[in-house]
Image (cartoon, rainbow, N blue to C red; front, side, top):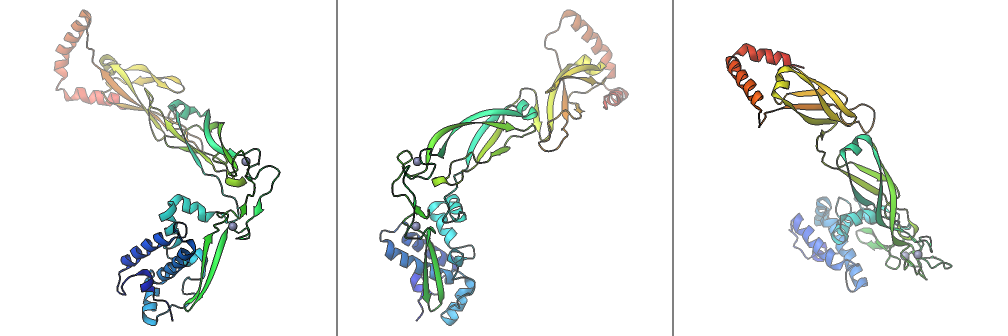
Length: 375
Ligand SMILES: [Zn+2]
Ligand SMILES: [Zn+2]
């Protein structure tokens, strides 16, 4: 007689999909062998729960089960270890609940018998806009877990050996095959004896207490390519945390932040700056010096330039990280109004004002100014 899956999950036959999911999650949490008190009882119960959910959680299989009281084996799962709980639900979901997403991903990705790869590290580095423009080399130092020297990362006391786990025969996982009226179910769990490593250390190294890694300060020089932007990251392969028991090291990611610059702002490849000029320079035209990262650059201000007018200087912006070529430098003109005047200046401006009044509504005057300004 087949198991009553509804009874296993403690739900009514007419339960909705979300009820089924909620019941399953609740039970899986309670009977997960990693958290339950009585491990062997929990393991059996956990398998039953998964079996039931494997069928009831899948609308198609549930329909078949409701109709025939059974689901044919091989109908999209049931005999494939972790994969048997397909359909986006199942083990990955449970691992998410217990260990948090990131850890689950890593646990499933690594080969069960291989030593785990070390974690990636993040280092935030503030650089100036000029460093981003030219490229730079910066020395950074940080703490990380490096390989333990006395044991070479093995975790075993020097002179002693690491031995193969006898419970899982070195595979890191224990498999359990069950024949049921509905077909064969295989479940696979991390070996409880070796924690999935496949090896055990009879005599741990005294320096690292068997971890194979020790906390250490590390310095290295980071090469920052010209053209990087705020939020760019540089990967330094193999400079993250060392792997447990001699596993490969993770990577170091250097995240760049670009400090505010007094004169120059950046938007993509273009740089923006402001130049103050006097009313006379704006009206008569003039040459001004504009600050760039390659020194000062003369800029011709056309006669009749209006406040807020922008000049584009090609090829004086930020370099591209990959490939050649640079953005542009956009220079916005600000016409400054003097706050203090000498007597002579006052006289001249008053005279100008008298003549200038004639121009105030002279449309042709503004047209001339506009023509002169067009760069
Ligand atoms: Zn084992
Ligand atoms: Zn050690």
